[in-house]
Length: 215
Image (cartoon, rainbow, N blue to C red; front, side, top):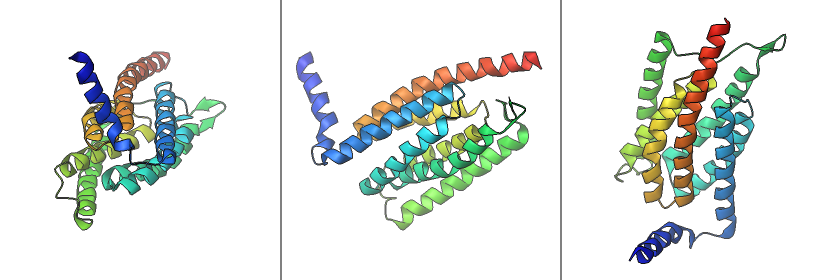
């Protein structure tokens, strides 16, 4: 009985990949590996999060465009653009010292985050409507997670501690969402993302308080 259930789960996971060519499967696997590597570098507070992340998002933009997943595609395109700024912001140093260390968000940044979230909801909703995708039940969920990730990426680029909380929320929602969309490998990626994000938050918290004690 257990074996039969396991076979059904396995068949469900691989079924969407049967109609894909081998190149697309290899690209998705490569994007997932690069994405996991990027999040690992983020956990370690290393600037290499950006070049690895940009490679991953570039591949996903192509794959998601072909799959017609517009909200997800927009997330990755946005990540690529914000990563350019983040790479610059994280790399700024003076006399060998990092100029922009890990900090907590302030009231002004909370307001900006809410504004960015609201604008993202409106923007992605319009995109879905214009391309006739709003009829799918996953559209509102995809729109919400897109907005959450937009804010998370911006706070990450600014090296704000709370960005990990937003990643955790978005990742948890994305696990079943991508599984439903037939991207099982990507769904597994988001499961691992969630675990890394939890440990990333804990590690950044330690770094933040350690530097605060030094100051």
